Image (cartoon, rainbow, N blue to C red; front, side, top):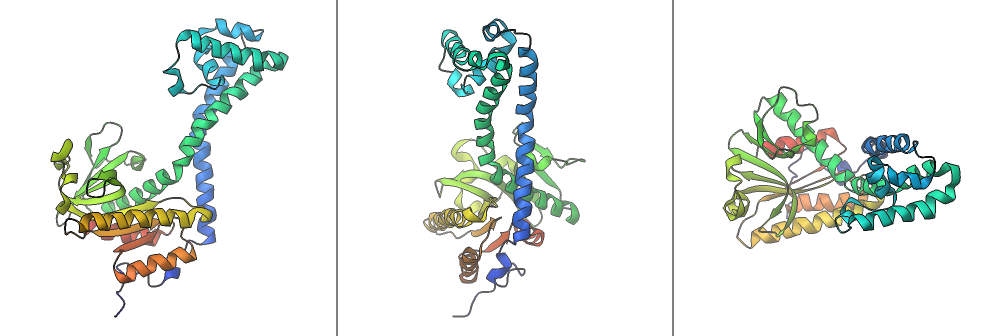
Length: 321
């Protein structure tokens, strides 16, 4: 049987998909910079905490400063979620435990110890954000590329703001818009909706990127929504933004399983929408597998997130479906 030519003319061999060492290094640096950026609020809070606490001459005096109560609770190791299960007496008990067990033994350096304990707890919150950082940065890069294509090809678009949950027209200044996009709508030949991270009923799982034929008004509440209409799905894909080569195979296994579920779910209703994969860390072995799926038609398209030409090609493909 003759091999199928891949949709993306930039991918003519498995090697075309592999992430270079240069792009891997660049990805790690970008992640580190973003982690430092999201840490800024915690650092500023710690500075304010230290300033407010400096009024106290000894640890127990901290209990008499109402403006410090939230900071003291955090330094005690209590998360925002845990506070929902504690009354004021419980909270005071936790603060006293912090003071007696950690601040008083620190002597004259008790304020520094308070700040360290505060940052230790906030570090857990930062870790939670950092775990989702690869996905977030991947989505932003993908969306930024799509918006650039819209601009350069003169295609008008609307976007759904994740903050207000409202559909908005293309702004005059779109700086940072990719951080707030929940969905996109455009019309070239037909009406198209691009939705991020939705639970697709036919699959009964979350799908990273879904392209449907429809209008923003078709996204209704409940089963009247377009997402419950199988024949409206044009393409569905998995986007993996993790850059660490050590986790590349695992990301692909997860994505491959998800893509198989998508294909099976739609085969159950006699439909075959297009499927695609976009990944940041693509190693040799998985590149061979991805390319094989492209050749046999299981995958309609694929792209390396770190290669600008790939993003442009797959973005243009999606917009023109």
